[in-house]
Length: 91
Image: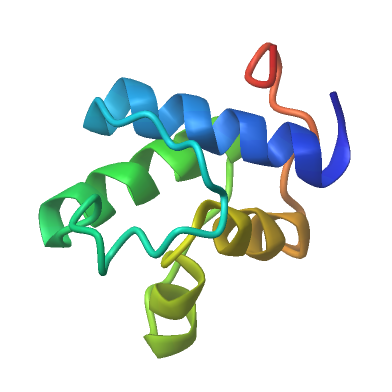
């Protein structure tokens, strides 16, 4: 799996592992539905930084991107210098 589909699959896996929530709709608002609160957001960001070897500086635009799995994927796919295919993460 590569590109946005691979990124989405990896994010879904991280949400399941870290937050114990299975995401079935990549466009659902994770904040509005209560999947992401402040602590869950920090933990998810930590795991994303670890898996993709990126640094995420939170600002209003970043928080908006974290409203959905697809938004996170778009953000990551456009991140400069990020690992495009985290080893074993999308399987």
